[in-house]
Image (tube, rainbow, N blue to C red; front, side, top):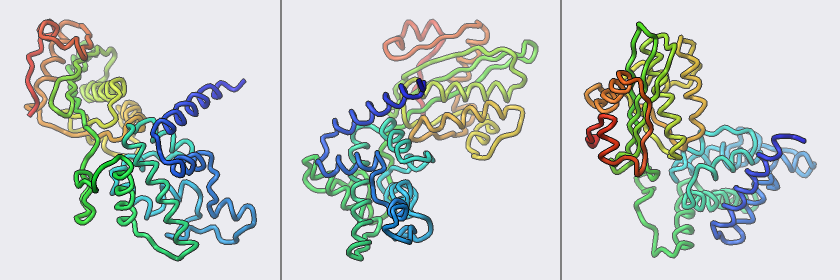
Length: 333
């Protein structure tokens, strides 16, 4: 038996369970179902069946029109996703429509998946309008239609202007962003380090404190890179889809921001960090001055001196436990 079959069954079950729970109109749900099975009659499929001779995309005419091109890669589609604040969905470069859809559904909340399904339907509808009626619907007009239909379906009176103002073409952030500060304490004599992590939610409420002791660490840069990697892992374990990772090591932050392969001595750690980006809708790396990172710095020193690790979150973050680990609460600026 293929051991990957179980994973596929689980993904299939989770995807369709979420799709049916969205309570979409039948035409929307059925279209998304067809897309997931790649039953959409794109020009690539029609040419294989010898129905058409030209399989170029009718909207951009730059690439062949497969399912992924229609719903993700076409410039008009990309404009729609950006205006709808789904730029994070464009970061996943899966090679099949099924992998991409399940990835988006896994990382999006119900409201996002609801809008995502409406957008898929409108993208396919506008494509057919162009082919059969020569009616061109620009990306911004598509966004307005999608927002209007989503609002009506949810029983809202008119389109609210909180999400996207197409007139000014400004995209506002809808996804709550958590902040995780990281730092490291390092001792060259023992080649060991302590990573410290301080997590805040979007309201500035402390949500997690964590320290990890590392052995056989070759340099201070490696210590900071380990701390950054632990911050990424913390974001995954907390199931936060939009995270801003903040540290005072300019070198590590710069390497994490780059997309090229890092060949330095800490390249393996940086690659581990970059490979985990797909677990998030949005993962931002930001350099901050040491004065803005005092909490993480102080906790790293305490953990290193005691040689202890700890992980506090939720109800464990009471005054007694915070005192035991030497933490003095201070809201971030």
